[in-house]
Structures are given as structure tokens and as C-alpha cells.
Image (spheres, helix red, strand yellow):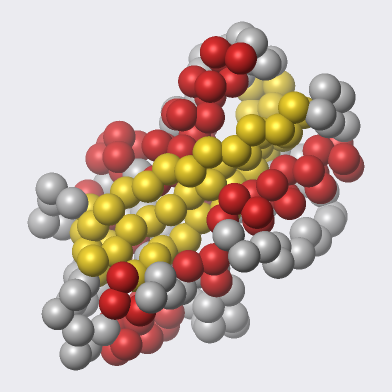
Length: 193
């Protein structure tokens, strides 16, 4: 079965492929469409992307929206994680967040991923969230992964995702959790399989 991925982010595509059922082929189509992610939640943005790509492709689509939620900052940057400090690189974004937390004892945080499947032919839509809880490091550590990985220490570890590498991230990450649950539910419903 072929499912298209509504992303231009090669890192996300790679992470989704790591938990993909063996009979599913993921495809990324070079669509020149801009989808405005103006939802208030990760699920809303994920659904917006899946439906928009699904309408253009007329094929089953998976999409996700994800980000970092920091307790001491009332969930910031949240749905704005990718767009926070637009035009700046992630090192600058992480340095800014570390500055915002410099006087905070509460470093708790979580990565959230909303994964959505949409089949435009059957109008079947399914969304699920995955999480990984942890804390924000006091400095940027490691150069593995992408985004905010070098400042996020998952619970049960003393290294950041930027230090831990792909095997650990595949096992416990928010995107891995969300897409594993999504594909399991799609199999149970008979939508795929």
C-alpha cells in the first residue's frame, strides 16, 4: 500500500519510515503547495495538512505537527516551535530558550507529535498524539537528531536526544510513539493491511 507523506522535512520522513509497517510504502510528492498551519493545537495543524495534501493528491496521506512544550513557559513554544524566531537557525532558537529558562528551577518539558491519516477516497480521518516527557538541559549538547533535540533530555536518560542517537529516538520519541499508535489503529480498523 502506498501512503504519501505531507512534509517537505526529510528528517521527519526518515523518522516515520523507521516505524512503518513493512507492507506500506511511503512516498513524498513534490507538491508546490503552501499549507497555512493556523490551528491552535498540534492535532488541528496535522489535520489541516493531511486534508490539504489528500485533496491535491487524491491518495491516502499521513501528516504530523509536532513541537516542544516547556512547563515553566506555559507550554511555549508549543505549536509555534518551528516558527519561533522565524529566519533563525535552531542553535539560535535553543540559545533563546535557554536564556528564557536561566532563572527557572522547573526544567520539565515534553515533545508532542500529532499524527494524522486521511484517505480522500473514503473520507477516513484518524489523528493521534504521541509524547515523550523529559527536561531541558542547561546547555546545548550533541549534534545528532534535529530541531530542539540537543537541549531535550528524555526521562530515564542523562543525555539529550542530540547525544543519544537514532536507536533510542526510534524507540521512545514523540513521533515514533504517535506513528506506531496511528499505524496500529489503521491496521485494527482495516483501513490499511
